[in-house]
Figure (spheres, rainbow, N blue to C red):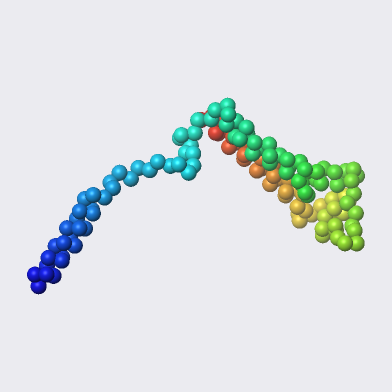
Length: 131
């Protein structure tokens, strides 16, 4: 019986010592990311800050089934013919050339999504530079 009580006392004292010596300062120093409060852009950071809006404009202008198709297919500048191995794409190019668009055309949708993404990225750059 005395042995059991002494074991409880030893275990209790070990737990008490562990609790009293534990860490109470839980403030962390973040090394894996830059926090907005700590970010102060310098001239060296500008290329990496302004690159995303310009990179997204590339897909807006030259992307597949985007602004180029939206501008050139209906205007008699180009015609995308149907090939024996495909390229019909559900008749979208024919409908664009004949000006009989439907709500199913992906060219206006892709152009809108890419433009909206570019505007969003440009607004993020503005907010970063105004800090």
